Length: 319
Image 1 (cartoon, rainbow, N blue to C red):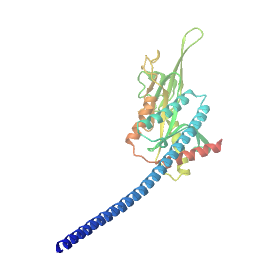
Image 2 (cartoon, rainbow, N blue to C red; image 1 turned 120 degrees about the horizontal axis):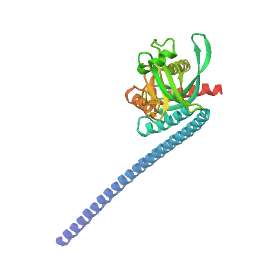
Image 3 (tube, rainbow, N blue to C red; image 1 turned 60 degrees about the vertical axis):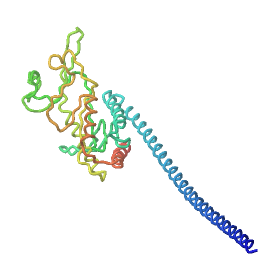
Image 4 (spheres, rainbow, N blue to C red; image 1 turned 180 degrees about the vertical axis):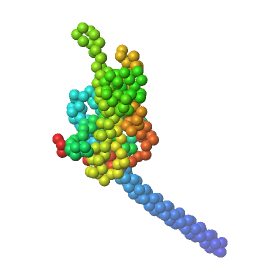
């Protein structure tokens, strides 16, 4: 009898222990389930938040791309208008097309972003003649705005053989021409003269000499007028507007006449360094890439936009 009672007691004890194990495992499973549920709820919230952030970022990027496309279309329309204005000047048309292509190249090479270069053609700014105190409008062939500086381009595209910056001291074989053409030939005044050859009715060669004084002064005058205008009409600190004298030749082929003096269609004899001078498109590209590589940046994109807006609004008012 005692043995049976003991066996019953052992069985009951085993059942109690088994039930307790089952209960503990069930509670542990419930806790694991709660933890798993809480983990997934947190993850779902995090995923939803991350999805919303990415969606907002995509919308912002899309708007940015669309705004840039709109800006590009507006720029293209402005460029077309400018080209129409320049339809009578092939040298300025060529320069304008090159500047637009140059902007694309500089963006592709990583020198600038799209909104960090502005090209404007055939613009006007007010100025005053210091000698006569007469107010007038100064025409500028091309204006380029970069983070480094504001640049004015005076474009020349003359037929014939150009000698830029010639004076009696550097004329060498051409001294006899200066002596015959100018009373003050011995002065150190820089001139730009162009030799033009043509044929008369009897097929004889005729040579004309044209004097264009010093076009570098035109570039400096334009840059000074623009600097004064921007200083008076913006709150942006502009140290200097850089003048560039550009002779719009794609290359310098030899001609019959220049074989006497030089093998180039264009000869730069100017030793002064107050104005950039470019002979062709390659020179012009070198000037701007060198500026972007070595000159400290002055303007951010919003300041570039403000300078552009100031000039455009003034010229729109003139129209």
